[in-house]
Amino acid sequence: MHAPIPVTLLTGFLGSGKTTLLNRLLHDPQAGRVAVIVNEFGEAGLDHDLIEEAAEDVVLMPAGCICCSIRGDLSRTLLSLLARRVRGELPFDRVVIETTGLADPGPVHHTLMVDPVLSPNYVLDGTVTVVDAALGARTLDRHADAQAQVAMADRIVLSKRDLTDAQACRALEARLDKLNPHAGRIWADKGAVPVGALWGLGVQQKHAAPAQVLAWLAAPKPEPSALSGLSGLSTAKAAPNTPLATPSHHASDDRITTASIEVTELIAASVFDFWLDTLIALKGPDILRIKGIVHLQDMPHPFVFHGVQHIFAPPVPLENWREGDRTSRVVIIARDIPQQDLVDSLSMLRMRPEQDHAAQGITLHTMSEPF
Image 1: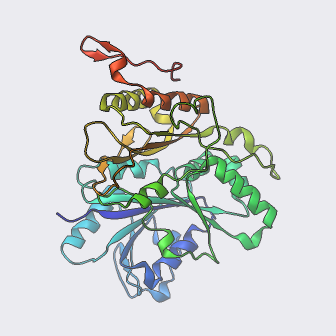
Image 2: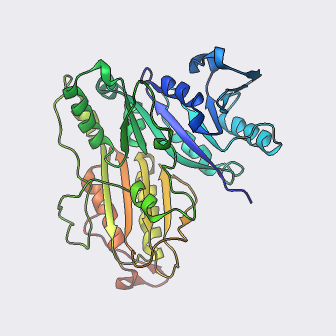
Image 3: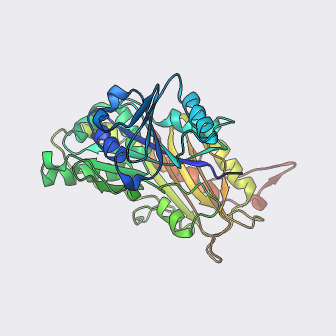
């Protein structure tokens, strides 16, 4: 069985510099054999002087990339690419999907995770969001979808630094830290970034190295909270609010919260299932992103998981995880859920089923009612 093809989701609001980044990628020999899926060739702004061959919805680029325009829906496009790859017509090793500027990336995550044919053949490698340094603050003020794109990112690419000043750049970075403190950031140089900064952002593979997993779950150093005494339980530290030229952003930014937990003891499978089922049943639509590495009792290897809203990719066991480190780490980014409610929910992972048994089931008590 072949390994699933890694997929990178490229998002960014209208005018953010996403098209420039995409064009650079299409013509970069270091990118390798990449199939890039765009909405329309005209919208992609392809340099047609560099096109070697065109056939209906597929353009072959001289650097070895393939550019494909969506015909119908995304599932059909991915299946068509897969079939042509199997037949040897279109050799490629990874896929980049460009979303429209107004798109919430959640539905693309869902497609890759739940489609019975796609999910065994494609795996989400990461979400890259392009943010315009000159107009990014204004865009975040006015558009909830732009906030969702930032909150769901694994990597944030900042563009157009030359069109603004250093103070505005620092203010925007502080704001992005608050919306998503777990995403790595990189500045684009005239629209270009090292290709390696866009690949390998996910860990949905059995042989992922421990360093990859920890980087995937990277978070700022936590500050003490009311639950800090519970064996490493902590919330992610949010960057301080930095006044911007348009101060109206505070109310909308405060809708997005993040929390994380570290649990040093092995977690009972029943506890993990109960916590996740409760979270998704009560607040599933408000979960922008959830990911983690979990060490369960009676399992030889930890596993990584990630989800968007109520949809989850299949958990992947880490067969090469180092001996001795049994700390579970979970990160949640949500919208319209108070941070303390997220913390209270995560505290359920500290429960032990042997404390409270009820006939055929398990009763778990938290410090406060979650949500």
